[in-house]
Figure: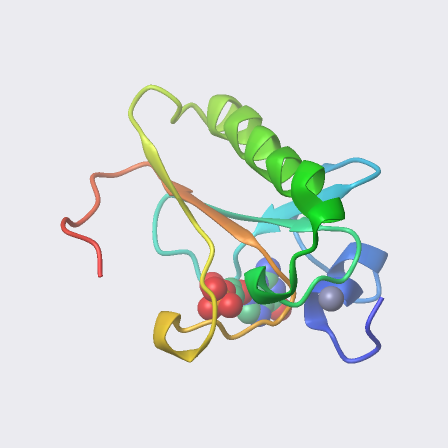
Length: 115
Ligand code: 5GP
Ligand code: ZN
């Protein structure tokens, strides 16, 4: 837990979030500013700032975030229509919260190409 981290505070319950999934490793909650009909953030319960600081021990954890994302896509009813999983890293990508997270976005056709 990082004292100043917004997502650590949502994981701990100190700040309210619309939680849609939780287990011993990960928490998922709805984005406060959704860009599509489904916009969920999947985060590790433990503070990890970004992809830049991932260690070998985090490989299982990151796979778990994707597994949870797939399950949530199914429960949101967008697994067949499609969805995007995005992890922004650093300024050029527009990362604003430095607690690693996977955006699960779907429910409408998305713009191509990316970037
Ligand atoms: P990033 O830009 O770091 O990839 O994504 C951060 C995301 O966190 C943004 O999509 C933003 O809307 C979302 N966000 C920022 N503050 C809050 C908050 O207090 N609660 C929730 N649920 N989402 C937030
Ligand atoms: Zn954190």
